[in-house]
Amino acid sequence: MRTRITELFGIEHPIIQGGMHYVGYAELVAAVSNAGGLGIITALTQPTPEDLAREIRRCREMTEKPFGVNLTILPMFKDVPYDEYVRVIVENDIGIVETAGRNPEPLLPVFQGAGIKVIHKCTSVRHALKAERIGCDAVSVDGFECGGHPGEDDIPNMILLPRAAEELKIPFVSSGGMADGRSLVASLALGADGMNMGTRFMATQEAPIHDRIKQQLVDATERDTALIFRTMQNTARVFKNELAQEVRTIEAKGNATIDDIKHLVAGERGKQALLEGKLDGGIWSAGMVAGLIHDVPTCAELVTRIMQEATAIIDDRLSRMRAPGALAEVSASAPR
Ligand SMILES: Cc1cc2nc3c(=O)[nH]c(=O)nc-3n(C[C@H](O)[C@H](O)[C@H](O)COP(=O)(O)O)c2cc1C
Image 1 (tube, rainbow, N blue to C red):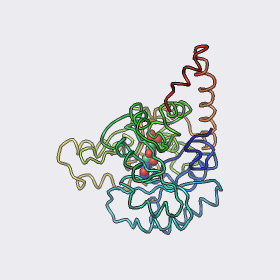
Image 2 (cartoon, rainbow, N blue to C red):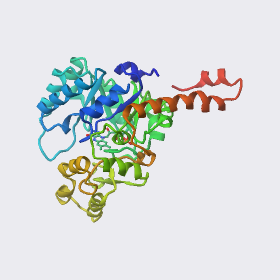
Image 3 (cartoon, rainbow, N blue to C red):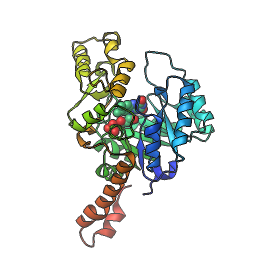
Image 4 (cartoon, rainbow, N blue to C red):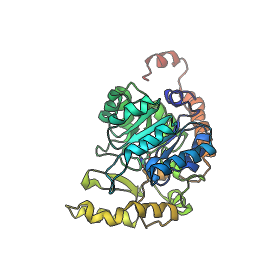
């Protein structure tokens, strides 16, 4: 399939694996890229910039295909040497960077000066337009459904994506709630040039997280996520486990500060939950799309299946619905 995103990033299929803290390691990234999509290493999952350089090298040993690095700038408990992470990304010939969290404008000259394409993650049309204005090459539009940080506007992708298509000139991918061929065709129909997935890629053979977490995603329904940090305007969608419920209870009492929940939401606990399978041991991000996850395939099986499903939907299901003779009229009036 050819779209503006496959052209921009030099990939075979318009499917991206978004940055995921404590999930986006080289094994998963290389597997997605080898499957013809775009894998993305999560920079801050690496404890130091030197570790990131090592992870990039490790990934290169596993794939010759393009892959990217995610740099997330969010409020943190500790100081992060962002400049050093940026230096490592540039010096290691990374061609694609996914930025998230804050306005990436200060980083664009150094990234784009080094020939790096920048895709910025946005949860609203106004932020996507800002990203376009400052010169980002593409945006990832994250709807309210998404795992991780959906922002504070609560606009689901059925509205957000066509709104983005109405306003944006640069290519964009859908993100949040995407799982299969139906998601891809819907994204393209709504104006996107591809799709980004997080939670779906967690439940793959190569995702280097504990099997109990993968099984929990298979067993989960679309009702098994919870929003936390709402009262602090830093909303996160996470798996609804005991700890998430506890955080919500504290927030519901009113006037909660980060100090009241810090011991529950510490990153180290989330890491243990994901890597050691301590299901209620920490907070871990997950999207409503868990309800659409029914198996744990390899990344190659998943990506191939998505492309086959998408092609079948377009060529078979949708084509058969078209009334005879209506083709010329329809294509003349189709929005992008
Ligand atoms: C476990 C997990 C960790 C994530 N960590 C990050 C992160 O560190 N930086 C980031 O930009 N996005 C992060 N995300 C968001 C994903 O990149 C992606 O935008 C999101 O998962 C899309 O929604 P979906 O889960 O419905 O596919 C995370 C998502 C998950 C599920």
